[in-house]
Each structure stands twice: as structure tokens, then as C-alpha cells.
Image (cartoon, rainbow, N blue to C red; front, side):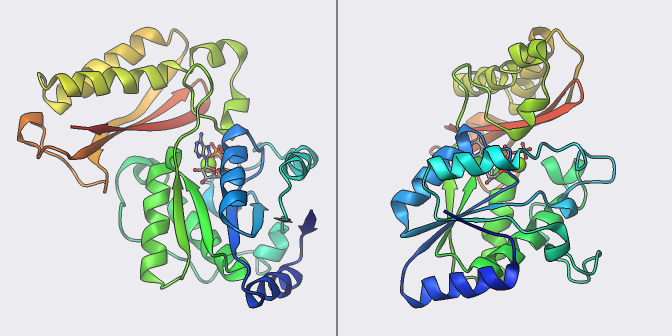
Length: 289
Ligand SMILES: Nc1ncnc2c1ncn2[C@@H]1O[C@H](COP(=O)(O)OP(=O)(O)OP(=O)(O)O)[C@@H](O)[C@H]1O
Ligand SMILES: [Mg+2]
């Protein structure tokens, strides 16, 4: 496994790989690797000749009051996980390498899927993501790049970015991987206290609850949402706050509140963001009706 920190050096190496007609599978991460990252890396290993994992905690995608400074950075542990999985290259640039001018004069802003879900509560977040992903794509020039459905809005933003900027990169969506109790793996789960962790799977259960309510076709979607919020609030006994609980279709378009009016075979998706104590957790679930 080769660890690259220098952008110019990385570009030479990745260009050589592509010249040899080898395919590159790319897994972008912010480190603090967990089981979901591992599953995604294994998938890339199966589908490409060379797998590149990037580890970069991107300051651009954190709001001024967010957790950039305390974001976990267990770099050596991350490297040993990558080594164990036989990752070919870890690309881990410094902030100075990525943003030498300290501020970025070129900002990539995908003006779709805006004003809803995470974009509503984390203004500028997806611009930060789109900008860093564009830079990483230009440095690595992968054949395929893997993004998790846990961050569904991010996945759609990246797909749009690739379409609009004519990147010849295949964006591969990866299903949401969960702990045995249902909690979606997330680096931010590390922030949870033991008692918070014990109750965190109520978020997943509330999505299941909502899904079941929708499938009865007895209630409007807004009622399903209200009942699910009540379910969540009743079952999390620690301080928490629902930031959003909403339903869209798979393209994040609004859907008819009357389930019976929705075309059969439509896939809806339920989205939730919850502050459990100080930790913000997100999750979502598809519903085929
Ligand atoms: N539970 C999961 N299932 C599927 N994909 C996931 C999961 N967790 C993270 N990913 C994906 O891994 C990639 C890297 O994500 P990232 O490093 O931000 O981890 P994270 O767990 O989302 O951390 P955080 O919650 O702090 O943002 C993203 O494409 C993300 O969607
Ligand atoms: Mg993330």
C-alpha cells in the first residue's frame, strides 16, 4: 500500500495507471473509517484493478459552528484498516496542499436539490463537498467513484456534478450499511455516549415505522410523518431534537400527500436528521409503493 500526500506526485502516479489501461476505483472518505467504509472499499476492490481511498477532512464542508476541529482523525488506525483491506493507494493530502491560498476562489455549486433536507440546515455544505470532490476527481481521474446512500442528497449532488461537468466517471451508489441494531454506520457515531448509543437505533426504527404506515395506505404522508415523529420522541428518552423528517421521491421531488394518488411502482424515500445530544445523525429509507 502506498500513502500519497503530495498532489503532484499523486497525479503522475494515477495518470500512469490510466495510461496502462488499468481501472481506478475511488472511495472518498473523511477518515475515521468504519464498517461501511470497509464494505465500500471491498466493493471497489472487486470492481477495479486499482483502489484509491482518500482520507481528507475537508474544512470547506463544515459550517462555522460545526465540528471540524473535533472531527476524529485516527490516521494510523485508518491506515491499518486500509492495509488490512489491501487498498492500493491512500491519498491523504494536507489542508495546505488542497487549499494553498487558504481561501478558494473557485467554488463548485450544484444548484439542484437546494433548500431542502441537509442543504436547508447546512448552508454551503454541499458546495464544500462538490468543490473538494471535483478537486479529488481531477487529481485521481478514477474510472468509478463510490458514494453511500446514507448521504443520499450528497449522492444526487455528485451525480449532477458529474453530468454537468462531463466527468467520465461512473458514480456507484452503495446501500446503507448498518450496525446489528439498525443504526447506520457513521464516523459521528463515535461522539455518542454509551446511553445515547443504546437509544440511537430508534432513528432507524422510526424510519421502519414510517415505512409501515405509508404501506398501509391509510394515512396521508404528513400524518405518517407526524406519527413517526411522535414514535421517535416517545422512544428516545434522552435530550434530542428532530431537525427534519420528510418524504420525497427518489429524485428528491415533492410527492402527493395522498398516498393513493401516487403512481404505483414509485419509490418514495423517507429522510430524517436528529440531534441526539450534540451529535447530528442522518438516515433515510426507500419505500416502494
Ligand atoms: N452507513 C453507511 N452506509 C453506506 N455508506 C456510508 C455509510 N457511512 C458513510 N458512508 C459513505 O462513505 C463515504 C465517506 O463518508 P464519510 O467519510 O463522510 O463517513 P461518514 O460516516 O458519513 O462520516 P460523517 O457521518 O461524519 O459524515 C460517503 O460516500 C458516505 O456516504
Ligand atoms: Mg459523511
